Image 1: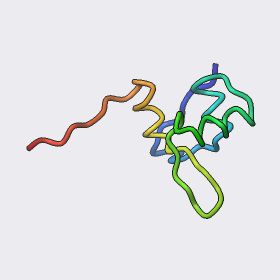
Image 2: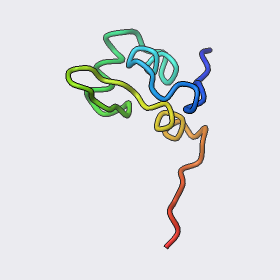
Image 3: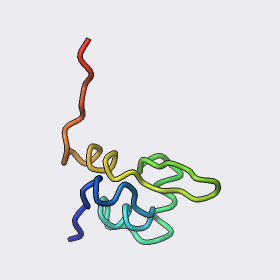
Image 4: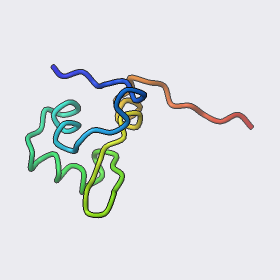
Length: 69
C-alpha cells in the first residue's frame, strides 16, 4: 500500500497518485473520479492536482479542523 505524504513535504499529488493511494485506481479511472468529484482537486490551467491535506482529511487520516466561533 502506498502512503500519503505529509502535506508540508509534498503539498499536492498527481491525480493518478491520489487515485492509486485512496481507491487503488488506475490512470484513467483516477481522472474520472476527479471529474466526478470523488477526489478533491485544484486546477492550474488544464492540469489537475490533489491537495495532500484535503486527501488526508477525506480519508479520515487527519482531523477536520472546525473554526471556533
